[in-house]
Image 1 (cartoon, rainbow, N blue to C red):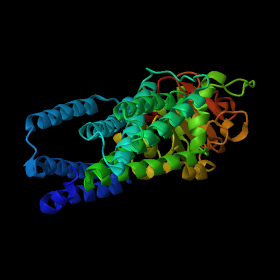
Image 2 (cartoon, helix red, strand yellow):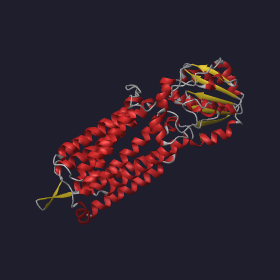
Image 3 (spheres, rainbow, N blue to C red):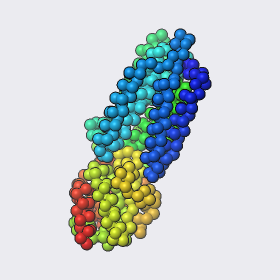
Image 4 (cartoon, rainbow, N blue to C red):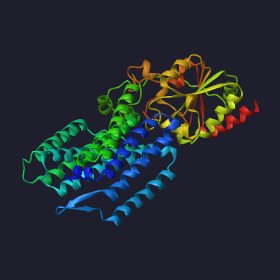
Length: 475
């Protein structure tokens, strides 16, 4: 591996393939910034990856006893590629949109596992590597392991298989694990002890424990931020693999994923008006699930019939739809788009208000509505949507909860206090579609449901919207 750079110089075609892959990654990421070009950008980046993979398989050479040797274990290589392709293709085709967040987390975990395995293999090949290489191996292994373990826990939490658990003294345990990881890493990198392999695997075990305990207490409302953060971890770990192999395409891809994930994490924390430290330590979703809301007397809510809702929407001039996870659970994005078209035929302006952390992963609602071919220019970011609330006749909330909870603005005792929300109370009327009065993912009561302007429309979002479309067509 040490001669890899020289071999690149001796094989310009391989270097050209890697350059092509790096450029397509950058182009693809740029095109992902807009829904109209996102699909094409994804395909371009995938094409670059395919070129880089096959160039490595057929053009890469390494030295064995001083002689250049090409890869020859093609059965194992293509067997693994075929198996992974089939499994990934089938999983992606079968996954429901409601399960997309946990699939993203699971796939991200597999990336972390790959980075971890690279470090393990390189350590086994050279148990006493130079200090510089050892730093890269250890860091790649730690970050990859934390990303893998944390992503698997996040997958379990999103899938409902793992519950939020606050371990007594959990923060002190995490600090102790982190200190242990740092101490053992210094010992291994500095070659201060003779039994280095045992210490190396000890670091692996501590990193896995840290990844599990790091994510376990974080509440549901913070999961989009955690997924974004773990994604950046995987990118950084992959970049260390690129350093390890002097591989420009691996390095470029890792840097892009790591930097994009970090920026997205910061933006989402800003959108929630919380620091990353507060998200990781505060865990307001987990606290709220056990501690509840403010505990104050809420009063009574009022219901609205399906017919009255349809009439209210039909005679409005402007309607803003607020989608949430309940819309995804009901798989109602297509009928929601049909509702939008029916209202527009009646002269109603229809827009969508999108909160940055609505759903279970970054951009969840954007992906959901894009699947239903909702025009992108109708999707308003939170700030733009709030600017238009005061001129809106009706806000229709479909399965959203915490992102419209006014307690975030006016109740200092609320765990979500300080988080920017969609200010739906500025509209003339608010219709909230929910299955029940059960609290949202943050586990706290929603003050909005008891406000004078708010009317509750209970039922499954898909069924309610189908009946509403029927009512509207008869008006």
